[in-house]
Image 1: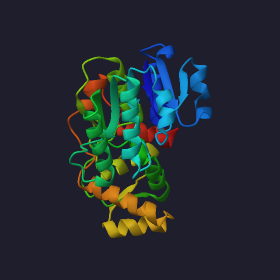
Image 2: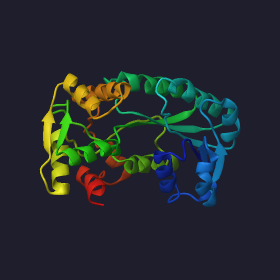
Image 3: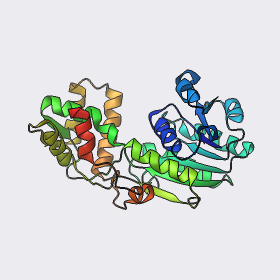
Length: 285
């Protein structure tokens, strides 16, 4: 039995779709905080159970009988270490044998410490649990740039504070294939995989991809961090969110989201989805 946490989220659903190509639905357990959102999964013959990272009582029931578990990291920054520890401790009690965890690219050395520290603490908890484990250190999702791309297409320029720094995101679908593989194939226990897209690109490259997709020029305008924050605020971004986005932008400028190992494409057995393919999907559909 394979359990998938956060099963109704965007990544969780993609992982389940990939798993259904490899195992029958009666071997899958979809773990969700809101069971109403999982009705379509139950209709496919998948077992659906209530699981809340903040409520260990729900986890005791949810993890019963599961041998392999995908722990998709929570979204509540600042609370995730305790939430993930709840899942890991319950997994030990429930007899789970193997956990795959979705961490952050180069979590041990990433300058994005406000994200990386929680992931690294979870990795350590998993490594000390006595369970078999595999760590999937995800780079950025290409989809994280969709709103930015659409906005740039609308105003005619892509504003950034990253200079010529490279990043190598991949789509959620690419990461989902990797998760399905490590959950169903042997030989991955004890590995830490640094996962990112094959293609490294800069913000100028992203502006060029938008230009090609819509057939009119999109300028790439580099600004200082202070100017980028002011730009976000002028666009109506709430100040706390602008500060988070600026921190991420500074991390990108330090190439926190760049990796050229091509580990992801080797793991999934095909090239990762190209930036231009994704941008065309957003702007030309």
